[in-house]
Amino acid sequence: FPRNWKNGKFPPGTGKMPVTDISYDEAEGYAKWVGKRLPTEEEWQKMARGFRDTKYPWGDFWDKERGNFSGDLREVGTTPGDISLSGVFDLGGNVAEWTAITVKKSKDSVIKGGAFSDGNPAKTAATYAQFSKPREGSFPFVGFRCVREAEVKKEE
Image (cartoon, rainbow, N blue to C red; front, side, top):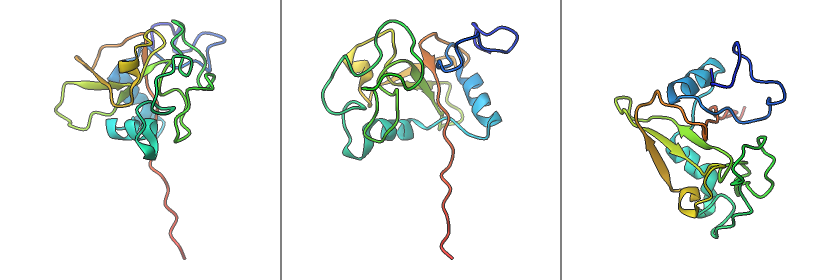
């Protein structure tokens, strides 16, 4: 469990906050437990860049006001400017996120996205990646998101 949780429960009033201070292995374990998975680095980047391949989730130009770089966490989805052209919230700021390790023997984990603690334009670009060793480490500015496979309906 994250460090700020008590007895396996999040603190009162924080139910809409991103979960942070959780290791890659813990994030991956949670995603599996709810029947989902972590997005791959490529999927995360596609969510952030959209089909126009923009530099930032909101477009091609840096705008400090678009993401949460306030120095404090915000509730998920409450930064109206930080929405990608694909319709995904919080990819440019608030918390950076773990992505799935696609090479099973890799000891490196890839973290994508900007964080509330750092409004550096280079680190907010959709193509920027941070690498973390070991996978068991956790950080107060790193969280995760879960994805699931799309259901494809067959025509009858």
